[in-house]
Length: 180
Image 1: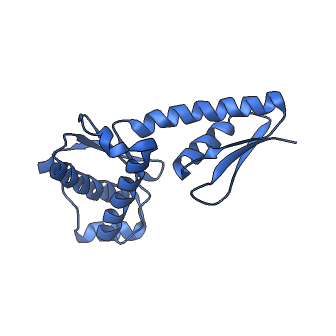
Image 2: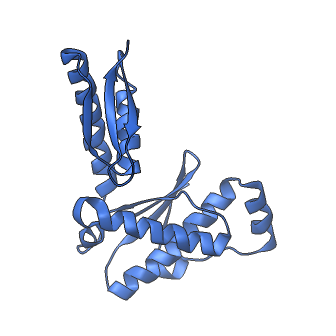
């Protein structure tokens, strides 16, 4: 389900049926999360006087929200996605406040996360192949949880290697090992 929100279209469903669906934890809760997030982000864009279209999706048991189309949107991403991570967390808190449930929604701005996912997938595969070639483990630089998940998924596609995370935030990193 994908829906582009305009300011006039953004609504938050708070009827009794929505409450019953929340208790069931079904897809309707994820749709509601997306609605709340879209409304929150629309207000933020208006305050900043930024243009952007908000797209809502439900994928793999998670609400996915993306903002595209505005010239200033890259400013929201920040250095290495730090602004995006903060904005995602603020959006999750807004959703939690409205729904009473901790949200796992994923936010993308200006396609940054999608592009980063491609880069990290390639990095994970090439690192795994290098471990196979050299037979030496490789410790990667510290990464965010999102980045580590993408790298772990990419490493898992290469036979003969596996990956683990080590360390404490914010210095947690992926280590790729050759399988014994």
